Length: 203
Image (tube, rainbow, N blue to C red; front, side, top):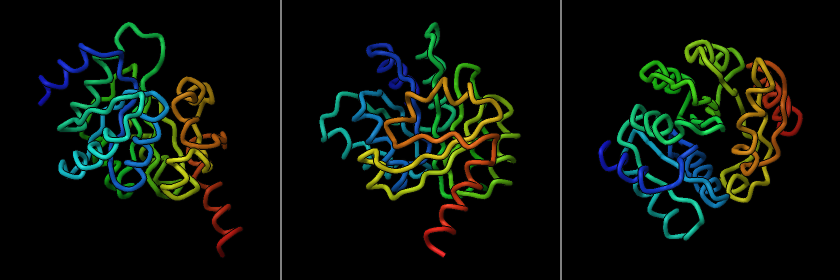
């Protein structure tokens, strides 16, 4: 519940990261970030899947902790509440099934000013720009080049874009454990670069 989540936060160090979407990629990202020492709040549309993924991560005895939020709004509130007074920017990774799901999710939540959205959901450059417009605040638009196994070992390539590179710089230390972070330019550029890499190697 929201009350239980708030109680857990009050007893721990600040929670700086949320992972919204605990499919194969989202769960791998959550696991990698917890292994890097981050405390993470996780959400999935299917609550059972989130609990199962979190249970597996907890058994690995990493330095960081992971909590489950009942809704995306609870996850955002957890970041806002936990990071009040902190100098660093919190980040919410959006890793859902497709761009339509990401846009629907983000239309339904208020993004606190101390939270940067990192949309890592697969999609086209146009979809990335449309989602950034929905958020309206600080957005990192990205594409991960590599399978979930690469995420868990931090050996993949994470293409990121933002209309101001300083937006990426403020959360770069959160993104770097996931893989080699490459800034591609304004929102949409990371997805275009990912498409070009896929065409080069797989077409």
